[in-house]
Length: 341
Image 1 (cartoon, rainbow, N blue to C red):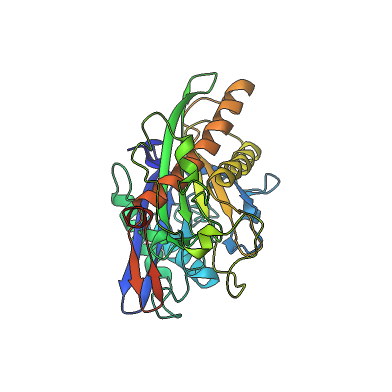
Image 2 (spheres, rainbow, N blue to C red; image 1 turned 90 degrees about the vertical axis):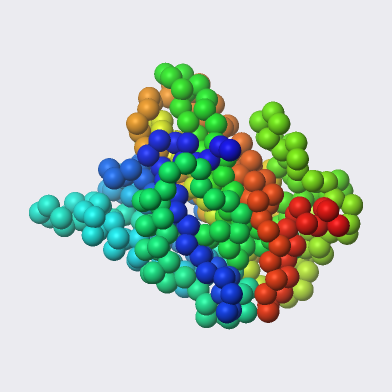
């Protein structure tokens, strides 16, 4: 299985809670101790974010030390406090004085999953961030996917959503570079084509990657069966958002990282329809560890294409890795259970 952690130095940790009114969690994408050059692009109309202005290429700080993806809507941004505290305790951060005086740079973005476990006030706090950071620090190998971390309470087009990841090695012109993506799929739109009842992302995998992707015969959930351009069913409330991180070992500038994040949204648009609605806060970050070569112009174009493809593939894996969930607030079938009838 390919994973964003195929990018050397990038680690992922999840923390979540289920039951007794809970269905939410937090995911930390951890940079190497020296940080990673970063960029961001926000295209959804209802974002919940933290420290995104700092990623403007005109801003001072070049590197981030972690990115937090979390449930809990705007309340969940508190999870980043736990990550900051944990990094600061380890001396990791932007130096602002004598040794040990550092400020960790930890951008964050949220999905709306409030109340899906049954308790509207059951949402991530700093302890979730601290636990996810501990998990990332201890991580080795591919990260877990599906209804874990920030994807624990995710729903997409009436199906259970979740966390997905994908990666690839491409020619950066000056040498090979690794590109990976991790996404939390919690979209107003659907990831399933209502005509073919197949996963949009299945057509964009590497050879053999989605050979086992199911094609359904049962009726689709209402949210997944509407023709493109139809209004959303039921009350119009902002209960969506797909967020994620693209990572690479290529040496990139902040401006180039912002471009990668923007092109990553093109990959999201191939996997979710409709996308970037006023009810979604779709946000993608890019982290470049700069351990590898700086791509030439042709290599940068290849990297951009790979980033978009990894986002599309990661959406597919999120949906295929999810499991059916039933709580006091509702029931959301996973794609595989629905296809199996």
